[in-house]
Length: 265
Image 1 (spheres, one colour):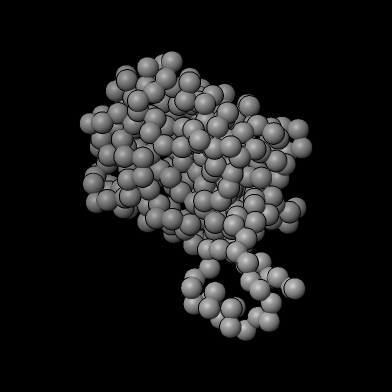
Image 2 (cartoon, rainbow, N blue to C red; image 1 turned 45 degrees about the horizontal axis):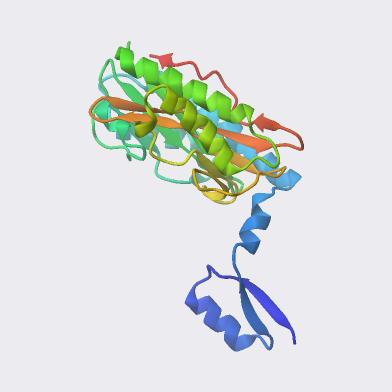
C-alpha cells in the first residue's frame, strides 16, 4: 500500500483535499519537514548571511536618528524604511523598540512613548531578504544610564559570550541555556531572565532547534540559531543582546558579529 506523508500543521481544508484526491493513505509526519528545514544548504546560508549583514548595516544607519524627544514608533518606522532601502522585503515581526521602564518588557512592541535621556533602549528586529530572515537585538543608552542598568548590561554581554563560546555540534539546547542562566543567576539576576535563550531561524523567524531550559535538541552543523539572554528589572529597565550564530562542523560562526559594548548616544 502506498503512503503519503504530510506536515501535520496544514489546515483542515488542505488535509481534506489531500484525503479526497490521493489514492494512497495519508499519514501525518510530525516535525519531519521542520527538522529537515533546520539544516541549511549552502545557498540558504548565503541568504541568511546577507540578511544578517543588512541588519547590522541598517542598525548602524539608524543610530544617528535615535535621540531624546522622538518616539519609539518613530525609531521602529525609521528602521523599517532603512531596511527596505537596503533591499529587505519585509519585517519578520513588528520591530520592538522598548525604552525606559518599558525595556523591562521582553517583547514590548513600539509605542508612542517619547525617549528620554538616561534611559536604555532595546531594539529587536528581523527582516526577510530573498525569503530568509535574521533576528538581532541591541540595547543602547541615551546619555549615561543608571549604574545598575550598566551593570546588568555587562552581565548580559558576558553571559551571551559564554553561551556562544560553547556552541558546537552535539551540544544540547538545554546545555546552552543553562550556561547563560547559571551566570546570570550567580550575578544575582536569575529571577529576571524570564524567557528562553534562543531558537533557530531561516524561512521563519522561529524554527528549531530550541535553546531553552527543557530543550533536548542537539545542535548539528548548518543550523542557524539566535542567542539572546536578557535581564529585565521592573520599573527600571532591561537589557537583551541577540546575535545569529551558524553551527559549523566543529564549532560556530557569529553571523551578526559586531562590537557589543554598550553604545551611549
